[in-house]
Every structure is written in structure tokens, then in C-alpha cells.
Image (tube, rainbow, N blue to C red; front, top):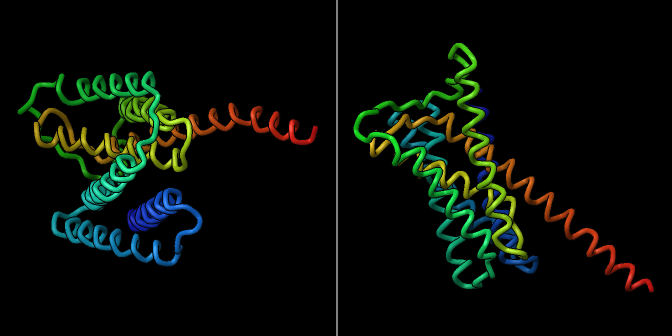
Length: 230
């Protein structure tokens, strides 16, 4: 089961990077060349992640390393593209998103007493082995906490492609930062299950935002088409 999940995450990560790159470069780009370049860069990163996972042991460590590698590949490229094209950002959404992210970081990392928690949990789906509803509530809250992040990122810009991927990837990045911060500061349990559900929450939010944007633009497109017919 763990091997299947690893392969699934590897394939989805590659397809996500390739889709995001093609969305930014446009349809006239050489698909084969871009696919080969992304495969080379991503393959090197995954290779390092596999090596780290084997040395340290455990599928959870491998998945954590893959999340880290994906974020280190995707976001420098994303920031480079943003600096080059300077997309117009909605100031209201930007301020709300920054405020929410700071609140999440405060609650999950800085509010807790540092240097007291040295727990690292890298066993996949460990929450299913715990008794009671507390573990279920904890994991669902981790997902729900990242839904606003997944909603806010796609709404930052009015135009542009790859909103779903960007929202999901930003939730993954934030989760990596939180869990790594907890690991370094010893201010909480660095838990791979938390990262998985954080990311799923951001994916849910990104899907909701994408659906809302589509529903809002649909009447405009229909009105435009009617105007052409007239």
C-alpha cells in the first residue's frame, strides 16, 4: 500500500509540475522538450528524496522529503515567473491571506512552548491506529484549517492559469514550513499525516475557488456570445 502511494505521489507531482509549466509557457511551446526538462529536474529531486528515505528509513520520511523537494522546485520557478510577468494582485485578498497565514503560523508554531516537544511521527496513517474520536477530529481540523488557504491563493489574481495547482501547492508549502518549524523548534509533533491532510484541505479550497470563479465568469461569457449572435 505504501509503495503504491509513493508511486502515485511521484506521478502526480511530475504531472503537476509539467502542467503548471505548460500553462505558463503557452501552447506554442515544445511539449516534448519541456516534458524532458521537467522530468530531468524532477527526477533528480525524487532520486535524492528516495536516497534520503532509504538512509533514514520509513515511507513517511520519503514522502516528507518528496514534499520538500517538490516545494523547492515549484516555488522558485513560480516566483521567477511572477517577478517577470508581474500579475496584478487583489490587495484585499492579499491582506486577508497574509493575516490568516500569520495566524496559522502563530497557532501551530510560535504560540507553543519551544524546546519541549521532540516528537516526530513519520508513520503513514498513524491516526487510524489511535482509539477514540480525538484523532479523527484532529486530522479533520488539520484539513479544514487549510481550506481558506486553498481558496485565497487562486483569488489573488483575476486572470491566469494554473490556479488549482498553485493553491494546492501553496498549501503544501505552508504545511512543509509548519512541520519543519515544529521539528527545528521542538514546538510540536512533526507529523506526516498532518501534512497530507493540510494539503488535502488546500486542494479542497482551491477546487471551491476554481468552481466559484467559473460560475462567476459563465454569465459574462454567455452574455458575450448572445451579443455576437445579435
